[in-house]
Image 1 (cartoon, one colour):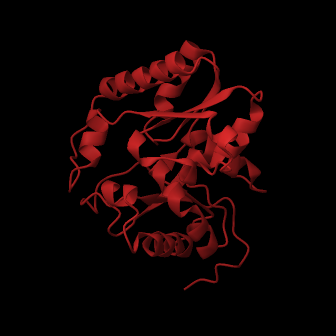
Image 2: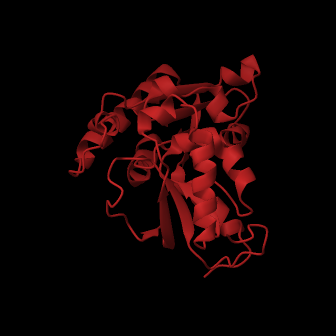
Length: 236
């Protein structure tokens, strides 16, 4: 096993921690946002299990992160925004940068806004997110500034709840419709929203259109990934 404390070559691949989908040999893209990537599925990390924080998953994520570093990963990201639940454990397990998802940005983004403005957060399933995952200080006034909605009725979420998950491509149009509806609901219910965070790793492809529609900043998984990548001292 490699010494995880040694200096890393920042031109190496980014390691992606993936959900357990029942298809260990499923094909995956070899690049993400222009960077070479390698993957590790986390044993037992079905989507619902991650939502429920099932026992043993925290340790499984930490071990998978160590395997990625052993394989040469110079930083760690994830394939699901809810992996932020284990951010601290994963970061403690390796000596490379770790950014598990866009929800990590919430404490910073809310401070980008005027004191009376609100932060809209759109997630895959609105039932499974709270201030514990947003990292927001548990101040009642600050919590009141966060409004959450999701796409729990979408084909995407329905597919993720299967064991194993379906492998047939899902129509982008369904995800886009549910995501757009969630954004519109938040804007109608909370007219003082000043920015959005999109949790799901499937959402960034729709962000440009929704930025244009709302005229507001939208932070997503790629935003989080790029902050980590740009901060690394050497780039390929």
